[in-house]
Image 1 (cartoon, rainbow, N blue to C red):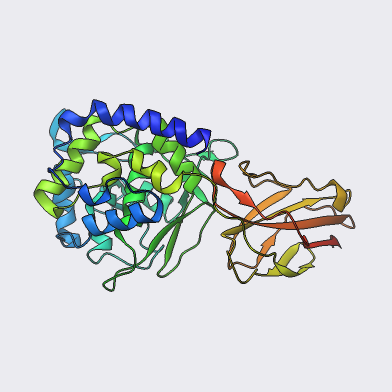
Image 2: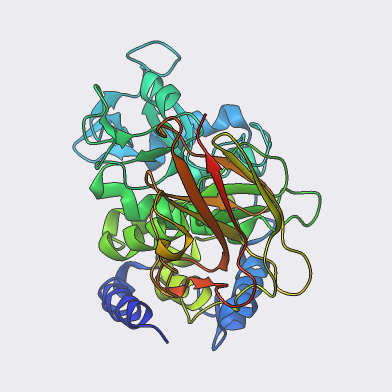
Length: 371
């Protein structure tokens, strides 16, 4: 077990104990998940929360007016990203209106606004209409370094790929997304949703969204509070008849996504090639497949490209790019004309402190002169 996981267990266990009195968890609700971990726990939780009662997309408006009501003003709701209070009557698409935000964007799974995915209240929140539009379908990640502060939702930051919400709701958002992955597994004609540890694009089933390691950190640093637990209870009692397991049992996050290293990929990518600053490859096949690749570059020779270390993820920057399995290419920008650049590619599984790189055997490499 990794140090990260041990700390995660400790912090969430203490949080869980403090909210036992308010949890209102039905006796035996999680009995089938007792003692499990990994995929077995995920499967058991899916069976527990699956097939919930649904509401229409139109009905979501009134549900949010109840679930996210301002405790200091019953005529208002609290906006997720601005963290301000706005009249319930200001619902609409205007600049100063509020509307229904899909925390898991409908384009990452192509589920639209239909039940159950498009109306699931665990990932529906009131947001300022224009801020909702600006967030769009970006992944979630830390963006303050190198990103832009939003002009209206000043507690939020963004880049071209990602969105960082206010600190006060980071854990709430992470747990909503963990719920969505476990609830929607592609059975009964529903979409399959999967959280990845890299930036994703719009997709059909399976619908991908990132970034896993960041969401796990948010889950740890912004633990469950009484307001989030009350919302969980209200969805269960008044609307859907199911619960968010990661609010009731925060330790489940570590048990599913944070326990030990994933097995490294069985083979390397092949036919590594480049065109100007576009690097492409043929995905590895057979055995344990990579979840993503780390492409590393320098301008001083292959021998000076540092080999990545298990448990130490490498962030994207000028010299490094992480690319999901199946993408097959990446682009390095801002290179110096007529300079020779050297590249190596490493497949990996897992994320954060659980990341496991394929570093032995025949590492693919290529050099190219920038045009």
